Amino acid sequence: MSPSLVVFFKEMRESLRDRRTMINSLVVGPVMAPLIFVLTINTVVTRELDKAEQPLKLPVIGAQYAPNLIEALKQQRVEIKSGPADAERAVREQDADVVLRIRPKYAEDWAKGQPAQVEIVYDQSQRDANESVNRLRDMLQRYSERGGALRLLARGLAPTVTHPLVVAERDQSTPQARSGIMFGMLPYFFILGAFIGGMPLAIDTTAGERERQSLEPLLVNPVRRGRILAGKLMATTAFSVTTVMLSIIAFSIAGHFMPTEHIDMVLSIGVRFLISTLFVMLPLAMLLAALQTMVAAFARSYREAQTYLSLLMFVPIIPTLMLSILPVKAKMWMYAVPLMGQQVAVTRLLRGDEVGFPALSLSFICTAMAALIAYGVTSRIYHREKLAISA
Image (tube, rainbow, N blue to C red; front, side, top):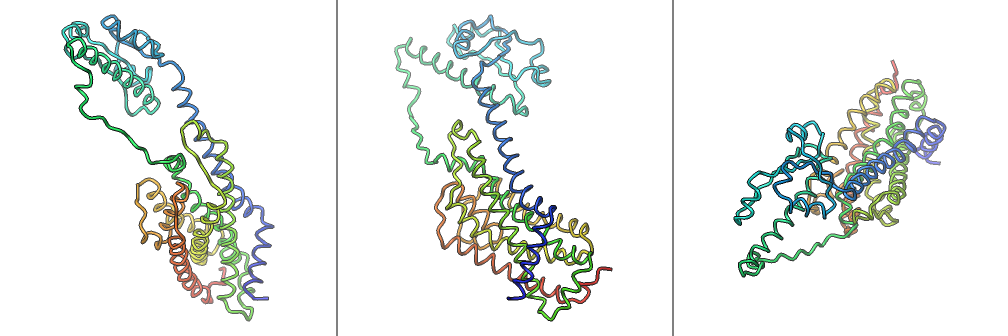
């Protein structure tokens, strides 16, 4: 049997016996992230839907000046309440989401055919109030349009005179494409899962063995150190890819527990998505395994290696977060950049877009080349004699 395979099976066997590695790689990442994601989405969506279905409680200052407006609001499921003495303070202290203030000259201006002014007092920084503010703004806009149409009819004019342009909207998005707005962070979870999945093994197979003084007996064997390293990287990559696969499966199951049908979105993660994502993530897992092993080789203890790799974690976190937030139009050259290629490919697959095999292959080949370079650098470190010295 090849020495690399011998080392691979050895590391796999020892890691599967280690409960800490099993829990961190195969339980915490794949299970906790989807669970937190589902709970967050369900809480936010359910709260917003419940708030939209309930009557809008609206404090009104000067309701006696506009009885017709108040009656129109009541017909749209608005519960009118007495306004506070200080509307601005009530909004700032979150005693009210929004306050409607009607000026004393409202009735006079309306009777003269002049614009009658009302004020909406709200705090845009209060996210819970946005739904109430938007509902009230829409109601007032409809009331204003209806009043304007009646004024034109009273003067013998058609209401369409004030609307010379009619805009017809053709939304080309699909429910799955719209889901990319809410679930745009999933590629970040997959890439981070690849890092976290292989991290315990990369530490244990290098810094851990160095601390236990078991690395030196392994390196003195008449086997090329590059093959020993290859076996360790294969084991680390296997754990990393397994974590990604379990994360995808967990999110596919979690999608059935999200109220996506209420917001006209669909989270579809099927076999095609799984295969395509694993295809582009495999070389990235190899690259991350080589980088993690390289960094862990400079540590003399398990804890020291954890500190170093915690800093290394910012390498995949920063670009993936930026690409998740910023709108980027996918171009062919992006697939050739490690991390960016995986982020763009997984995002487009999540939206249901067609990602051709040339793009996926370009991402695979370029990231694999970067992984080979990282392997070469790590191999040179493994040839240093002081690597096996733990003190």
